[in-house]
Length: 115
Length: 109
Image (cartoon, rainbow over the protein chains, first blue to last red):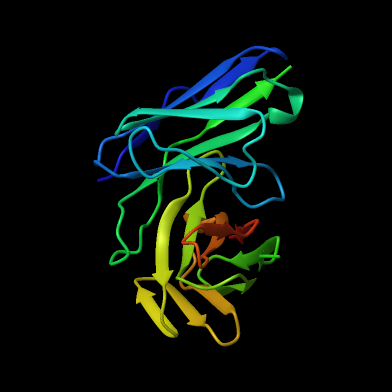
């Protein structure tokens, strides 16, 4: 079974703080993703990575950065948290390859509240 | 622009059948996914369609018509545990997933 874990289920931070969200997967997947999920909206892609040290901007990268130093770990960084970054953050991973459907498997999510 | 439409909320009765529709307009098509998401939990994979037709998997089936930009998820013999949100997502020409906002399904006894 694919297992994707995220460092925290709930976080409360103050405006201006630097926030680190960690994601680890144990299935040797090449692809990893960070999304945010807000009520009434579909999942929105923040950043993704196809390999170690690689990163690509998604649809809403502003205010975020990422780090992928090891294949199994993908970190999302909020350089200076703002109230509009209050959201549910979901990490996902998938196996690379066009022959397979590249199904994404999700972690349990981190609910971040920025005060 | 790219767009995925699905109803916001649906209500059904335990033991009944419900069909959740999804229409999409995307730049290219490389497959359609359905995920289930219980409140406060991660989305979990349900089905994948890339060719037209019906894919059956136990109580759940998913249908795709590429020419109509349309899919549906059919849930039979509804159980209370099926109360969840159901997310439709399309893989576009860049192999990126475009997500619908999800359909919240409420099951009543």
